[in-house]
Length: 97
Image 1 (cartoon, rainbow, N blue to C red):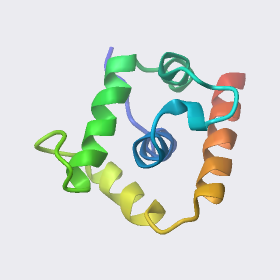
Image 2 (cartoon, helix red, strand yellow):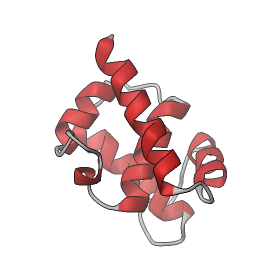
Image 3 (cartoon, rainbow, N blue to C red):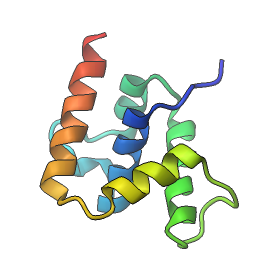
Image 4 (cartoon, rainbow, N blue to C red):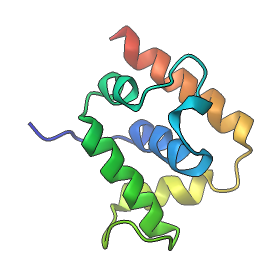
């Protein structure tokens, strides 16, 4: 079954792209765990990171989703601390489900 991407998924993914590996998210040092919390495969999450590379002009995939572009535009100027707080909130909420 194909994962239906949400804005929250892209907020987390953009954080991973922008600030490096998943170890920057306290207590979640494994991209596999993050992908499971988001309800997708690890390869799907890595591909979506490629979307943000493409949006940023840094290679990656040839095409990217409109939702990813909207999240990129909304979060590119947001301070890291705020973005991390939002990511932690999203992951906490999704892990409760």
